Length: 256
Image 1: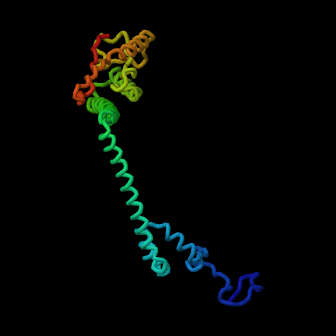
Image 2 (image 1 turned 90 degrees about the vertical axis):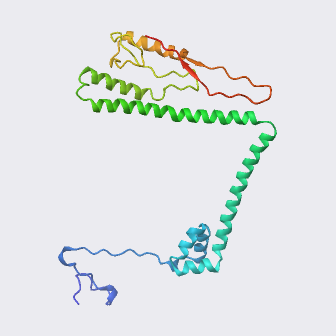
C-alpha cells in the first residue's frame, strides 16, 4: 500500500495506515472516544442508582445487564419502594395535622374567625378572576365591532374607537375593584365638545384632550371614589350564628 508523504516514520500496521481520500468529495469524521460503561466504578453507579425513584430505577435496570445486577445485588428496588412509602406517609401525616388544626379551631370556638378567613379569601379570588374577565370581554367586543363594521367606522369614528381601546388597556389594572373603596374606578377623559351624556355610555373620548378635559378627568376620578357605597355589615345574632350577606356596592349615576 502507498504511504502519504511524511508518513514513512510511522510503524507499519493496520492502525497506522494512512487515511485514504474520500471518493466524490465526501468527508470522513473520526468518532470521538466515548468512555465505556465498564470504566465507571460500581460504587459511583450504586450511589447514582440509589437516588432514583422506583419507576426510574426499574427503567435504568432494564437498559443494561450491569445496572440490573447492581440493582439486584444491592436490593435497591426495595429501598426505593421503602423511600417512596416513607414520603407518602409523611405527606399523609402532614395533611392529617392540618385537618386536626382546623378541627381544633372549630372545637375551641374559632368558627367565626375561620369562616371569616374563608369568606375573605373566596371573595378576593372571585373579584380577582371576575375583573380581568370583564375587561377582556369589553376589549374583545369593541374589537369585533370594529372588524364587523369597517364601512361604518371611518375617519374620526375609527380614531375614537382606537382611543377607547387604548384607554381601556391602560386602565386594566385600575378597573372597578369593590374590595377597596379607595381604589379608583375605570375613568375616561371626555372632551368639552362631546355631548353631555352618561360617561359609561359615551363612546366619544378625545384622543388629544384639552386642558379643560384633563381637569374634568381629574374631577371624574375623584368623584368615582365617592360613588362606591358599602352596605353595612350584618349584626351578630345573640345565638352566635351570624347572618352573612354578600357584599353589595351601589354606584350613584351622575351626568357630567
